[in-house]
Image 1 (cartoon, rainbow, N blue to C red):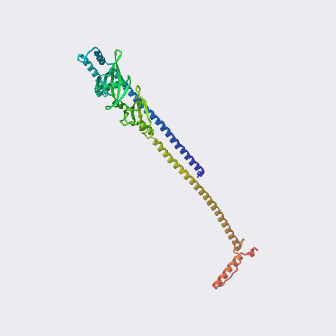
Image 2: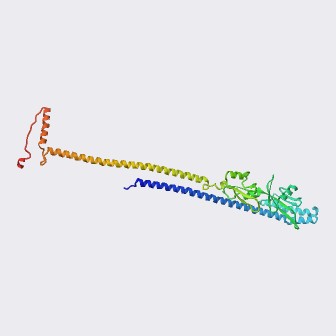
Image 3: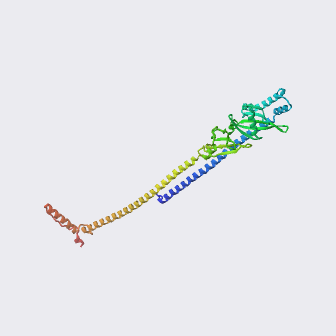
Length: 387
């Protein structure tokens, strides 16, 4: 039975260890590259998500801006201004016109809330001189100065952020134009949290939670999706090296900001610990391979010593056999010489030397035992006939 040589076996084991090491290194490398690409894909997915949220908020605010402009051009308000220009007083029917405007405003304050849509918190009509004519809604307080200040800080097609004890409000305004001149402004307050928070949340079931908020260009938070505290969020994100995704809301100077956090690293494949664990496993396997190679080297040394010892034993055994054969040959030669000395070579009968030796032994025995020796000579070989 043929067996492989130790050198070829050792070469095979070393080659296998090198191939295994290369395979594990390739596995870790591909895992790192794949995780990086997956991380980038998740970042892009999150970016697309906040782009959709920003587009939804932009569309919603554009609708609310159109609503305010529609109220500024509404027929009841135009009728009220026309009747007032005609000199009507509250007793002559101007009050009915004002009530019609109130119903129109109240529809967008209370009516939309009843239909489950984000309703205006307050709608007011302020004259050009700052006089408050109409204030409808939950925030109506008849404070002319407050309305005037709101109007003065708001520009057309611009959304202002106002913070008060009632919460953060988005203030929209539209001019009321009468005969080519501005007769006043329709000013509407929209609760930022009630209006924007539902659009900032991730409505997909089972999706990881990411922190999302709508902020101003200055970084002040307008509304959040999770209700968490966002004070100092930018400094905290920079300190923890957390990814910050943001996109602008079209038509405003607002931004939608997302801190993905665990939303990106929520799975095993995207977690940085996956590559670390895989690297540790590969390191353990490589350590095992190195240990096996070391054992193989020791085994190779032992096998070399064993083969040398076996070869020495074989040589010694061969020499012992040769020595034994030589001893056997010498014994055989001695036996032949002794036989030749004591027996006749022609007849094979004992000769005189053997007879004299036996006679000497018999005489010694007789002397020791006090006996006698009787000698009888017989001619057995009949040499006389031969001779």
